[in-house]
Every structure is written in structure tokens, then in C-alpha cells.
Length: 384
Image: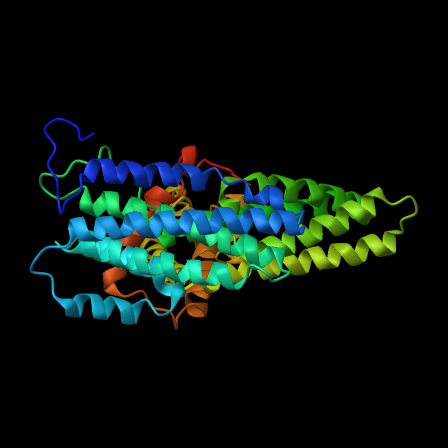
């Protein structure tokens, strides 16, 4: 039943329609996919496939209704044709949503509903094609992508459609851009990297003790909310490493030589995780932050307080190992900071942040550390 005082738009009640989307978001957000990563039996794959296709069918229907309700009579057919061309590559879907929200145009809600409906149909076709494929990780990856895309599109609609005069969709929630998401994941990788290094320093020539510490760190990492946003390859890497460590620690007869080989694999895994820095949004972000640090350091004299510099540099934790070390030590050496920042800037020189990205990047500094209930990280924070 329509709430008193509300009006139909395109034959639909926006609040009721969005409530259905929110209910779907709640259902997909409750999927405990990480619990399935250790069991890829046919029954598990069938369950994952069923919940994915059901969610995609419902989402495509709901986004289609939003599209009809949000589309203005003056909308040109060329707009849809342009979006179809852009959406042929499913990898650009999340980027499309960020750009559409950022434009805040009068057609943003219809554009989002259109590309979301198209993406749901694309994912549904992919789901049907892998039903008989004996690859549990592929099924998990598709399920995670389905969840992420449904949630992202729904929050984007609340941000845009909810801002339309005469339409009330309730309180706005935090819209998470891909930059903010990547910053959160990279921070978690950097903290894991630091804990691995600490295990090596604390346990010296006792590789089995090092592995026990790393095993604990992996378990903690997998339980973090950011784990959902890890690349599927990274999740597979961590799970494989975890299994090897558990098997080694549980063996009756183990050798330190075997433990040392696993330790070397662990160090290799850490370097693979650092490849997150190749993401375009992080390259742009890091360039902008490093440029700002360079300008601020140029005006400082030896012995001056570096609290503001350290707080600013915390935004690029995980970008550069030398900067990470300065953050860990809370270095107060102005000359050392200048040299470290300059070296990092030269390394990233080919990746210049466009002017259009500056506003989002600056705003992301504030959002990245405070979402999901985490405290803001200031100059005195030591989240290592």
C-alpha cells in the first residue's frame, strides 16, 4: 500500500520500489560467502548458483521498474545507445556508477537504473554459463560481484533519485566510491605486511614460530569486513597459504627447512598483494597526496613539528615501503621525509592525477578511515 501523501512516478511508488531494493540489498549482504571458500562440493556450487541467479533476476526486474519511473519523456534514445556501448565491458560498471553519481545530472537516476539493469542481465547470462563448470572459486567470484554490484547500484540510486524534488527515499547512506574501497583494502594489506615483517623480526631463525604468527594474521585478515573487496586472486592466494601453514603446523614430523620454504612463499605473497597499487584510482590518488606532501615539506625547517605531515602521509599507507617505515617509526626527520617522498614521486611520475579527480580524492581521505565503524586515524594513531 502506498504511504499517505506519496505520488506515483511512471506508474510506481518510488518509496515502495526502493524499499524492495533495500530488502534485496539486505538479503545479498547477508551472504556468508567466505564460509564457503573451503567447501566446493557440487551441493555448495548449486547453492551459490541458485542464490546468485535468483538475486539477479529480482534485481533486473526492480532496476527495470526504476528505469521506467525515473526516465523523463524528453530522454533521448541516443542516451541509452551510448550507455549500451559503454557497458559492453562489465569491468567498467563500477566506474560508470561513480562517474554518473559525480555528474549529479537530471538524468543520473535513469542512467544508473539503465546500466544496472543491463549489468544484472549480463551477470545472469554468465551465471547460467557456469552452472556445470567445476570451479568453485569462479562461482564465489560471480556471487561476490553480484552482491557488490547490486549494493553499489542501489546506494547510487538513493544518492541520485532520492535528490529529485518530490521523491523521498529516506536517509542517505554513505556512497562508497571505488577509490575509497581500494584505500580500505590497501590499508588492510599494509597492516598485514607489517605483521609479517614483525613475525620475521621477533622469531628470527625459528621459521615454524614465524609461520604460527602469520597463520594467526591471515585468520584475522579473512575476518575483516574489507575481505569482501579483496580481489578473488588475492583471496585464493591467502586461503592456499593458510592451508599450507595449517598443514605444516599440524604435521607430526616437520622440518625447519620446510617451514623456511613456506616462509619464503609468504614473503612472495606479500609482494603480490602490493600489486593493488597498480589500480588507476590509487595511482592518481597517491600522486596527488605525494605532491601535497612535497609542497608542505618544502616549507618546513629541520626540527619543526611533523604531526601534520605524518597525518597526511597516512593516506598513502601501503603505497611505498619507505613511507610505510617512516610512518611506523613516526620519523621526525624533515630531510629524511623529503628524500622519501621525492623518491616515491619519481616512481609514480608517469601517473598524473587529472584535475577532475582532485575533489573525489580529497574527499576520500576523510571517508576511507571512518566508514564501517572504524575510528579516524590521526597523527598519533598506530594501527600497525
